[in-house]
Amino acid sequence: MISRYLKIVFVMFVGVMAALYALQNIANLDAAFQVVSAVMAMENHNYYASSLTPAIHSPALVWIGLAVIIAAELLAGLFAFKGGWDLWCARHRPATEFNAAKRYALLGCGMGVVVWFGFFGVIGGAWFQMWQTELGGGSLTGAFQYFGSCALVLLFVNQPDT
Image (cartoon, rainbow, N blue to C red; front, side, top):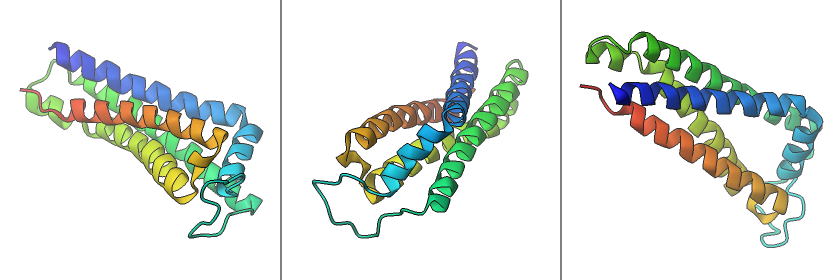
């Protein structure tokens, strides 16, 4: 029974984390735009000055990128909260029902992996080479921590209850 409660708490923390990052981005929208703009423009790339793709300087495309990031963070949070609630409601039910209630919990954690591994690690890190700057490197380091948290919770929650 303790593992069920831990799964619920961990999923809810993923929801809180994702929601807080989305809301922090909204509260600091101009700063968030500047950071995403700097990454997409590939500013101050001294180590690998050449890239396979051109830098993006269009404010409209930067806003779209930022909107996708924030929307995905919000979605991860909402899925995780719904998943945590579903798990809470199923905590005293048979294992098959508790396992079936994991759908949104897994989606929330999975969306967190998409955001912080996919968007930040793959697109930001590999495509836009954001690791080359202090600003981008800090964001990439944080994203790895958030991705790791979501991935570990995803793996733990996905373990079948018996």
